[in-house]
Length: 224
Length: 224
Image (cartoon, rainbow over all chains, first blue to last red; front, side, top):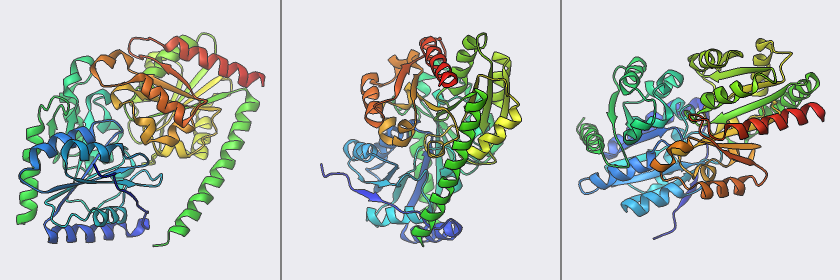
């Protein structure tokens, strides 16, 4: 296995982020690349979910992954080893999120002009990443059962900016006080248009539904 | 893009905050109040752990709690209902962390001049709160088993700034791939001086050890 490439990304000026994001989105659209920004708390299961999804979809579309972290290259190594798709590690230099310029630096370093789907796994953080448009076609967030069903009450913006909320680790539901119907209600309260899919990235339950969601999104993005 | 200028602004803010934090810490010291800053990912069990700890300690010392969140008053209500100690909710207005000035506002609003121990439950976030000295006597962080044993590799600063790391939710260890010895090794790598205590805030296991740690800290703070 090639050593994982680590890209040190630098922050752009805050005021220009929305413009940078719109420009990046337009470029990605032109190239027919669907950029998905995946966010969650630390340890909610972003990398495990991606591994499951990518292994089901890689035969029918070209996928590349950017793993953002403050330190370590654990996730990019996992994606490369478990899925074989092109992946790079972005180091944020202590920053708690990625902005559009940092995302552009990542996309360029990824050299994935032929990709149908590029996935950005953002820094594990329910607050800051939600505030910065990365230029993605859609935002997706994962809420894991052990975190509790009340997260949409406490971190409203994250749920407002996401088109899909994945409820992960449903295999351990019996061991936690987690009311999935209440949780879905809190999500809808924050964002009535959000899709919600319950999964276990560990057992694979529900992953096909996430794949169907991505298929529809990528198709619609290319055709629109 | 002018990264140098951004860095200057950041340094200036941090420098200002460090002075504010030192001033608040000195004041708290003079008043004999031990201020503890509790941090973790969203849903790691800060409030549940506090409830357990406070109910064991409230008979022997005066305790007050500041619950910081972006939105909702779920946690302050829980603390008030489950422990009966004085508690207030701080809303950060979207901010991902508390700084020393925000903490001072909280301490003043709390009106707890007679307290031996004031606990600040910071915003659920492994990144930003670690960057800002709140003026606390010590920082404490919780790492919960479902988040994974690799968190100290990915969020180094959080572990570097904490005097105590509580590993929570050990009751569900059998259902997760969590290597507690590896985890302790990663923590020690980041911070050789950190104490580490494994607990289940749900069952109460290990909580007495946390209480002993706090007793020693509060005593040493008052005597030094």
